[in-house]
Image (spheres, helix red, strand yellow):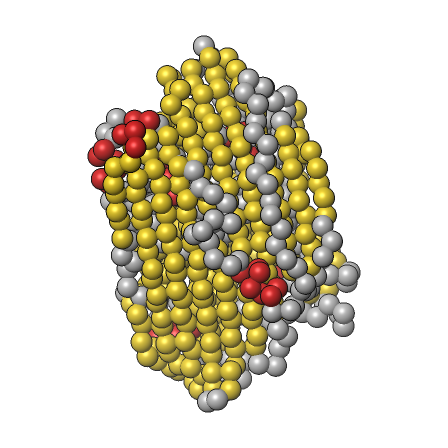
Length: 577
């Protein structure tokens, strides 16, 4: 793996977009085929190639075709956590905003919705950075930034539904947040952050949803090849009835773009290329008191300086600003957790090359009619995945490889409360495959990756279904990177194309409650080039096409396509159903 400035440049391969033979019918298409929404997928052309030798003169602010977080029509109150707060003090040292949050008296809970809004402005020269926001020690946002494009300020915004954290907001709590940034005479970008929480009052038209009663942080040390597991300790109420863990995994260094890692045999075939090994399959095993409880997947995040920075101006890679978490139901283990004692939750990455950050939160519900529940774990079958790896020579001294994983896991347990005895079964299947080619003495890589997950949690009391949640997610990714014209960080030429997608359909129902169905498909096709000769930029350009089709949490369908060239939005079109 080469470094150009801080640009990670491993050799990479080409991936076709989600219409390739590796990807089955989309989750969105499956849901829409049921008749909920009338829609047929349309072909999407690749973005126009970026002309060689062109140098962009700045970039528009980041845009996305995905809809913003929906907002109730009821009255609301906003609380400002930070206003134009700089990530760095005048002496250049990093700083975080802190304070005590007090729930707004004019908008008492329970709330119809709570929304986090963030707006950040930066200019000059700077790398992409990581940031977070914690309330009472619980991380409610974990994400990365957009890199500035020069002297003209860039402003990037996002909103996030944080209603499920409502238990934290009912009383005064400490909070702290910020962006981990470092400035020098060269890297001058200083991120100015404004962050608010908006509380929407519940009324007849905007009822308050059911939210967890318990929200607790799980604090893990970073995982490394030398210490690939970490443990957190937690004590939970004795009247717990259900629980889940939300986990976000973020790779760094050689695993910043973990999907570009190759089998160790390929690393050996190109010993001078600096390739990352251990294959490209990544997942974490979550355990409760040393018993495996779930396998946690990770989305192929690409940060705004990743691969070639001009790929991501002004359309960022999917979920760059707010990294995508994975949530698993651990209710089968509740019977072990209601004794009032401390219990361990551990996380382990069987395959990794470098440091991984783990951000996790435990959510739970309690029995308001009793002070003690009971239960037992019936079975837990969560084996480590076993990647199947093949490599073979290809034309022109290239090496072609394939890594495939087909895995299933399941847990079963019961909980007895004032509502009776409820059995919960949690099961997931994952079909993951990547094919790739390394050529040009390790300077070029093309890869095509498919990741399809089917998840179900089902709770029953006798013949009645008390609660059920199903989720189907597909994460298609294709990458083609060429770094053959690399001499040093002052003389190089990087070219890349990336196609990625997020395709999901979820269905959740609770006895006596409303049914929640959501589906969406977000695709992005980008091309970028960056070149420097004798320390001066000789080419800097990109183009992209991104499309959203989906149904929001109110059941409303929307579709939108954005195309860009030279760092500017070219077209922005909403598509009728």
